[in-house]
Image 1 (cartoon, rainbow, N blue to C red):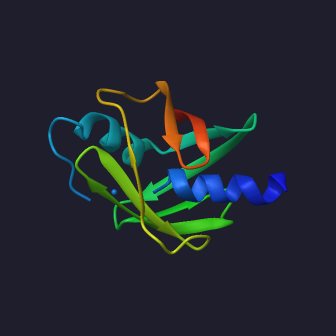
Image 2: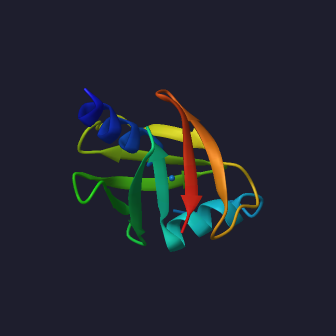
Length: 111
């Protein structure tokens, strides 16, 4: 069951290509450097490309991203429905923070 929940949570969090100036910092940093999600004490690396695509969980999760205001919206091979999650402002490379997804709270660290 844990193996099924982790990719599903990754797909939901990886859910955004132009950011507004107020939140550009955090989402620009996430897209530029990538992030590590900590889900059930397991680190999962997520990488973004400028063409609006991402990969996670060693390539098991692939999808598209776009930024909509202060939210990153994604679709993935696990869930083709667009999911958007609000990110905090003013975070930079090396910072960690919590996100709330439909699956619950997830720790994010910007690489």
